Length: 196
Image (cartoon, rainbow, N blue to C red; front, side):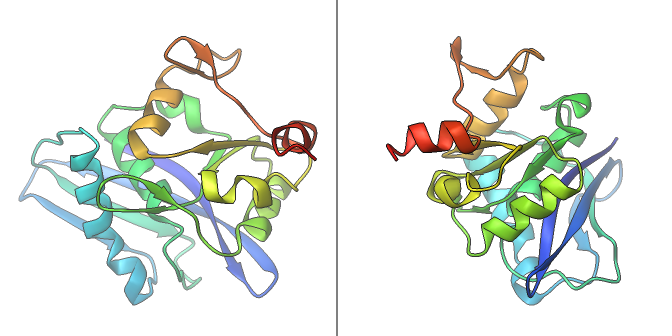
């Protein structure tokens, strides 16, 4: 099964949308990452695989191929982990593909599945906004910086299991977690949330 999710690459002060495509097929079990990747991004394969396992997602033995497109742009850093995990989990059916078409995902995953903050989230969120993304999921550490960008909803989550739960409970009228409305931070909400 095929799926896709979105994140951003930053070169200097310019950003570029990255489409993270995942394909799951029968064959010898493997997890391959392609798309002009830096060494730290190649290591995402192990971070993401172990984070998914430790978050309670048991994946059947399949051949998983993840492509970060466009392939002519070099991808550096660890902020792609979250989008890779979301794309793979969507391909396995844990997340509905239709529910993430206008969303972007920024964050590094720890081995236990926690979403860690990264540097340079502000230009990434602004790039997402310029490309029509309506919601951006970030770590709680990056919520304040990401909330500076107007007209895009910022959703701060602490770990991968929480993120998937929020996406699974998306009713189209907002996000819910354990039956409660989930907080989103735009500029106004950001100001209220941080007490400024």
